[in-house]
Structures are given as structure tokens and as C-alpha cells.
Image (cartoon, rainbow, N blue to C red):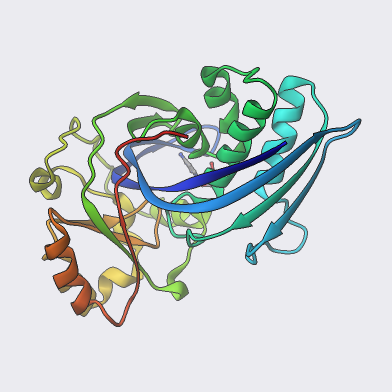
Length: 279
Ligand code: C5P
């Protein structure tokens, strides 16, 4: 069976890192929102007596000896369903790595969902959401099928919120990449405790006053005065996730085009929030 699917990137609108827990993770308070930016995946699944996974594509970021999260997702599905199969994934990556956009987590979630489809949807959405936390803190959101959700605990307690479709610019500097674990440990050096976020308000003009991201504190790009002064003129700008990408959100295409011209020296992806989810 051949399945073509997409793995969408997310951004965070507000991200409060609350207390460090006994298991080493931190409790979070955040709003996840899908974007139209996506990786393209083709999966070839065949039943077999043992589960094997091969991955090909422009995934050049894996360190030697590391197992891709998509491979872990396939083995998780195999053990949850007690099924064995051979899986070949071809991936065309568009989501930058270590950018706070959840690319690796979204790829893994898409593999889980596609395998579930291939095997007759034997696992319920709730089971997929709960068990996918073992793959990473962002995976439950991608598995949930929601476009916009409040996330708490590690991010696996999800409550649907009203999705929006504003245009966005995703700006990043490849040299600023930081792993999620390292970003959290840098944040542990803070002396001031974070506060929870207010409720969801879909009106963009309210966002600057309402939603902060604690990871702004450790982003080198925000020390670049040229970038910061341009970003501050967008209706909303913030780090996404633990960084390093910055999202600028606009009320109209015209506003976005105007500011994008001023950011010509930076790496940028033009996208928009995803309001409807058909996959
Ligand atoms: O869950 P995930 O694999 O994405 O987490 C990577 C690292 O980020 C964890 O090992 C942990 O150090 C940190 N983290 C955290 N609290 C969270 C999510 C991630 O401390 N809620």
C-alpha cells in the first residue's frame, strides 16, 4: 500500500515554561498552531514477518548512530498493534531542523497516522495521542488532528481553540540552531519564575499584550538590533517553540510583503496559519 501525506509545521503563540518536574521535563503553558509549511512523505507499507524501516530523502541532519523519530514511530506502532510490516518512507523536507517548528515530531506523527490508516484505523485518536508522548513532547499535538490547541503538562494535554489564517513570515539564521534540551537547560538559569498564559484570543491585535515566549530570553537573533526593530513593527512577533526561528504575524498580505522586503538579508519562509485540516 502506498500513502502520500504531509507533515505540517507548528508554531507556538506564547510559551510559558513553568516548574521543572521530577522526571526532568518542564510543565508548559502554550498555544500550538499548525502552519501551511509542510514536509511531503510517501510511505510504502507491506505486511511482513518482522518490522523493518528504511528512510530516504533530503534528511541530511541525522547524526551517525541516531535513530530517526519516524523509525521510532513505526516501531511504536508495531508494538502497540502487535503488527509487523516493512515500511519505506521517502521524505522531502521543507521544515528547517532545530527551528522550534516541530518538523521531526510532525514527521513522526504523520508516520503513526499513516500506519494506522494502512492497518484499518485500529488505534483510536485518544490512544495515539497518549502513546505518542513517548516519541516527544510535541508529537501528541500533531497526532491530535487539531489546527490550534492549548497545550499543558509536557504539551500532551490538549484543548482545541479557534484556528486563525493570518499570513506569517518564519525568519531564522542557520547558525542559531539549538537543540530543545539545551534550550530548556539555558532557561533553567533564569532567576524569575514564569507566569501562566491568559486564555485564547483569536484577535491578532491583542497578541503582543497577551502572549510571551520565555525562550525569547535565549535567542541570539533578538540581540540583532536591525532584526528586532523590523520585527517589532509586525502586529506580532515571537520565538517559536524553543527557537531558533522567529515568527512574524500579519493582518494582511500587503503588510507582510512590505516587511519582508526590509528583512531581505535574513533566511525567510513565507507561510500562513493552517485553519482547516483534512488529512
Ligand atoms: O520531549 P522532547 O524529546 O521534545 O524533549 C527534548 C528535551 O527538551 C527533553 O529531554 C527535556 O530536556 C526538554 N523538555 C523539557 N520539558 C518539556 C519538553 C522538553 O524539559 N516539556
